[in-house]
Length: 90
Image 1: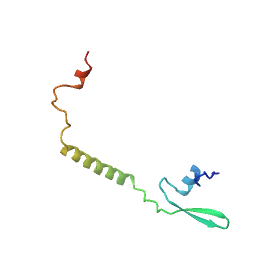
Image 2: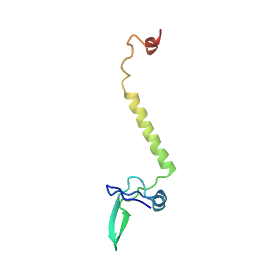
Image 3: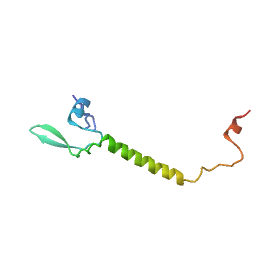
């Protein structure tokens, strides 16, 4: 059971959302039907990728990140004449 808030928002019970395949970010369309409301999922669910496809995409993203890190300039502050440890010695 859900309650309508002052902003006309409703919550969908988790069990019902899982049963119907509703996911975060899905868009619902609302229809009036014989004195009741009907909600339908308006978005087409994205196809689920296989584990092999997800691993392939992950490996490609990791390779791109590694290539970006190789082309980056070294962090500023190198050779500044002091270290962090120097700040905390007493």
